[in-house]
Length: 138
Image 1 (cartoon, rainbow, N blue to C red):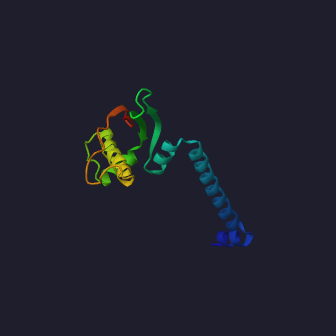
Image 2 (cartoon, helix red, strand yellow):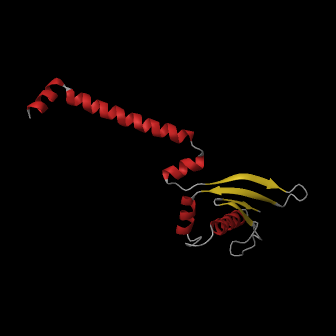
Image 3 (cartoon, rainbow, N blue to C red):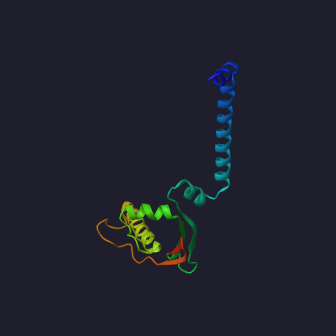
């Protein structure tokens, strides 16, 4: 009790609180610095956020109507797709992403007036798995 009284009287409690605040700020700055050095996929995964990106787009030089996209995603994106009805536990990830990608392409074509929304006229989309979380979509 006397110890606490002296601490308050000498202002040591305030110094301790300031030190704790500074240490917490330093820890937060280190965390932000580490995240700034991460690539976008790793950063999203570290935050528990879904991530999907087009890594590359390839167009067939002989037939410009043909080509493919190389997609990359994280586990959180697959969870979101499953929650939205694109897949179930046990479904291969590339099939889940393929279902989503087909819907995305069909919706874009419907909005552009190219196809009728109630018809599935997006054609065939080929998905070749490159690794656990990367596929080539053509």
